[in-house]
Length: 86
Image 1 (cartoon, rainbow, N blue to C red):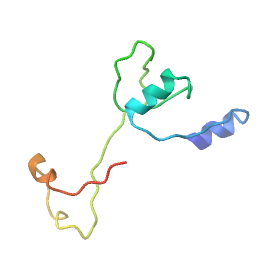
Image 2 (image 1 turned 60 degrees about the vertical axis):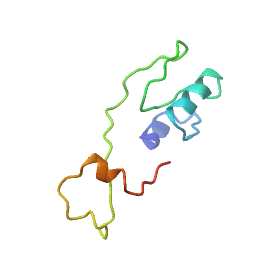
Image 3 (image 1 turned 180 degrees about the vertical axis):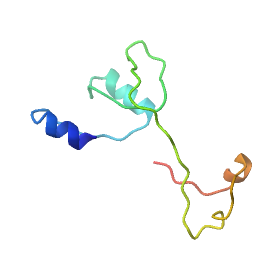
């Protein structure tokens, strides 16, 4: 998506920063960034939200995982797994 944007608008400089919704909202409020893409809404009168794309999250596992042969998971069993978040 960023590649297509850059090809269409060559004179616009883009910088990609990664953060959670609260960090993005704070950076917007401070004027540090012009635009943010977030998953959740932050209650702030200073921020305007527009739906951008529908987001689908998927849990992924290694093909070597002991969970590979399961067709479904209970939330309780997933809470005992080791998760990577960024």
